Length: 338
Ligand code: NAD
Ligand code: LMR
Image (cartoon, rainbow, N blue to C red; front, side, top):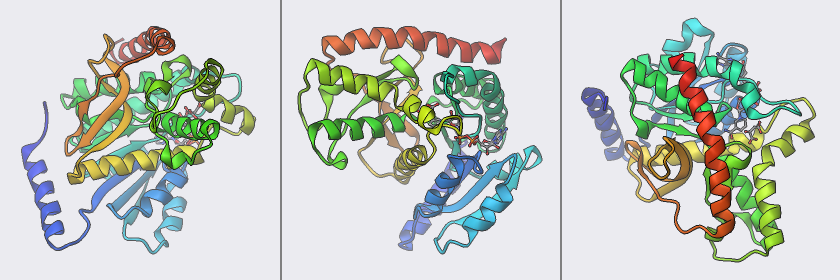
């Protein structure tokens, strides 16, 4: 447990002063990979978020241009750009939330695990920077394969002596966003009224939508269940194929990342009842990491919820998900401890 009481106190004081003045608590947010397909729309949406006072945009290419462009928006957040490894520490120092969409995306025919060789090293380097410069920040990890990059980040933080499992969150919000959309289509509802818990991980069969727990309560035929589960599990591939070599989901992902980051910031602010799905350190199954609903608070994922009652279809899916997840988690851990 490595919180820095002095830092926490000064940051809490700053927010308290701000609230007393009736202003926004003004969180400092860094995006690593900010010039990319996800990074740019994500940066724009975070520049529009009233909870953000300072927005640091880091990339190994093109971050000055993205920063200049966004800095003309007449919203409250101050934007600063950082280019290349020598500026990583300045980009991270003092941050409350670090969002990481850095790394290569899939092309048709690839699995997310095919990205491991390149993205594992990128995530390792960036997380070493987080451990050094903002060890108390909440980390939202987007880079694929999430099922392995989150364990990599955890091992980096453990080695640095800064690991707090509550502050490391793999972003699986896009699976929930897709599930809400596809279920709403089948039910003929507005997607904003639908909430589908999606558990497990973020790749293929590890993406497990719990259709028996959809809100508002509803039921599906076996054919609908099969169709929806397959479509949600393969939503990423659907986009990769439609983009035909030009990358993977970027716009829906930026939307999902902002939805999740905003929930984290509201949790940090102390709002009650903020619940989202995320891939986190977990004791819900025998695996060390698992995606479930978590309650977000001042310390990050303060509560990890149990799976709740599953039907037979979901129990079979859970076993398949756990088998694949175990290998992906182990691969990430071994990458750091090899
Ligand atoms: P992209 O290639 O368009 O952008 C990636 C950015 O990362 C580029 O600007 C690149 O310069 C930057 N980058 C590369 N190495 C870096 C480093 N060492 N430090 C900082 N920045 C670095 O890719 P994208 O479409 O934005 O996707 C990024 C990642 O997000 C991919 O791994 C993709 O698979 C993943 N992704 C995850 C989800 C999810 O649900 N978690 C959804 C979509 C995409
Ligand atoms: C997604 O779900 O869209 C992302 O994980 C990107 C991908 O490779 O599918």
